[in-house]
Image (cartoon, rainbow, N blue to C red; front, top):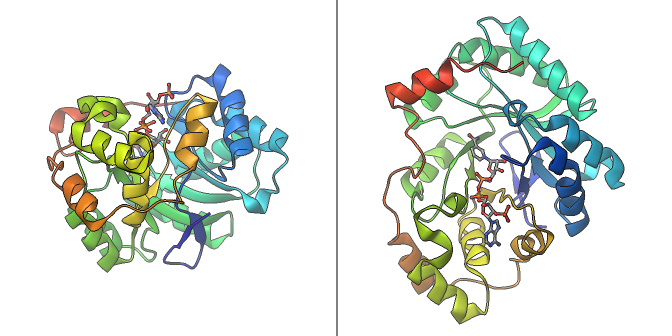
Length: 281
Ligand code: NAP
């Protein structure tokens, strides 16, 4: 598996498996199959409601803990560092783990400065190997870096052929923050799987559109965590390292960028309020 080295030296697979919107009662089977397929990076979140099932699959999977790379995310907490530490403990109990590979602040809303100081502390204690954020736009990220000791290792953001984040990726590189894609297929929005450009490129390589998208992301150095509940798609999405896109194909894919989210803008006040006031647990 190709890897990336984060700003603190931690090595992370460039391709993993996401479990958003997989119901709790299906997650153990799905994650077990993903591990059997070869995935070692598993991406969950407290807000997905399936950490316990991920934990059961990890335990039953028979792969050594140090060979797995487990990410979970902190949902928005009440102000203060204690709430974050309690939320971390809850996630670890649900996952059945005694250390975590990557912990992400899920949203740039609420008192995320105290959340960050709490995760910095957990990192210093050796309970988390790398700490990062998700859904941070450049202004929020720079501010967080400027006013804290440890810079995030990762920013997990929507990145797909219709919202490519090429300029932001350059900024992140300058800041030493690794870009990670969520929604690599845009969850199929905008007819991604039948897009004519992606389909033509896929046919030229005798591959699927999904494989072309994941190849395009990983060739850019973007970590991808596609989700599928179907074993044959898990295998297909994992099998992307034996072909290469040409410069012309990369240019044709670059032309698909709309520069806008297919989901929502994390700076939209309505969404800031809706997501920011949602509580779990
Ligand atoms: P996604 O991976 O872009 O798309 C998943 C969809 O694509 C599912 O409907 C899946 O259907 C389908 N699919 C998967 N492989 C396919 C293939 N080879 N051919 C055709 N269809 C295929 O969406 P996502 O789950 O939103 O994003 C991936 C991960 O990113 C999540 O699971 C989560 O871990 C993370 N994420 C993070 C955030 C955040 O705020 N930080 C937000 C969203 C997602 P089937 O399952 O039926 O195969």
